[in-house]
Image 1 (spheres, each protein chain N blue to C red):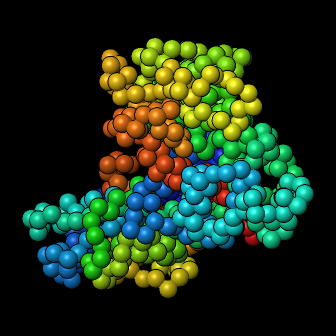
Image 2: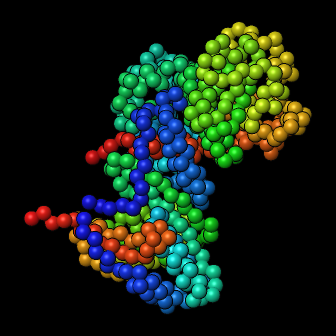
Image 3: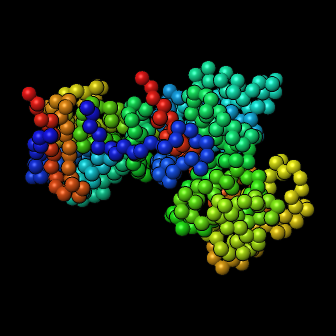
Length: 318
Length: 182
């Protein structure tokens, strides 16, 4: 027997990352602790470790994405895994192939893990029950976007020391936002208080059942919080008019430097991107010192490395 | 488990002292030499060597910690993943003489990973290995130490544990032997 002083840690309680809802607080702590180590790695001259040399990962994006796809791809490459990319626009999906057929075809090329973004809620779960590979949800419709919530909470922990006891307000299009739902689960599991803020039409009717506060006045919400997460208005998902005009939305719910400076305390401003400057957040706020938008992007790579590393550690080889 | 102390606190101190003088013999005033401890247990040894070297040479010795978790070759071959520790190398190792430091040299696999991890920080002029205990049988790789505190002959079933005053309460090295059952 080979004796090791190094402590062994628990594995994740899940085999796939479908949503934050399935994770325990221990899982999230484990991901953060691992991400700390990877954050140091990606700031080295050679930003790469050989852990996943024998793992192949397919990135399947059935919906547009820049940041998330790049972030996942970088995370995978920095773990030394082999990466294949797929985007629906240039594929056989257009020729009428079903999701399962597409994925099984890719898996027969010996792929160990699938990172998928899909416009339909539940697509990642559906897939994880039917294919022989680890599945990471990179956003399924308006359902969940777990890695975004993890990196948001990780960024709060980095800036404020811990997430527990902090007050976080999520502002904007809560109804169509998978970021909002994942954030609510994640922040609550870590012991933060969550409030949502936006026009009545964009707040889901039964949201209070998740145990979040609801506020329709932006300034009141900001006075209450330590952290404000400003979401984008998802026009592409809105099938009807939820508010009169973007200009009116921006006047009611846009975060300006003036509002920020008039608060009685300094808050942290976050944004999952892409930013619509001048709509939900003005340029001077986005570029201010209180905004941690670019830190969120950097942390995204470290957190995704941690998620992939921990899921991959459950794949056994002989 | 049968316990046998193979290095008591007095010999422990003498050994550390000797290792320091051996290092000085080769590296003179440490102007181009750095010590890097392998996480988690090599770090204690580096701290001790640093204290001792600094009191002998009366100058600061540059030291760092290196975590090798992500470079191990047994990833996914054990039940649970390992907890990574902090890497802390805030100096350039390019062109430096690096002394890798670990408490026990056994299969050599940790050192192999350590060499891999080290090269991610640049190209050192030379890399040497210092270990407090060399379990010289059952080496899996062609790796030998340049500076050895004590060489011990052990069985695979045995276990060597280096204990530190600041962690376990006393400086000593213990050999654990499983009870023979007929």
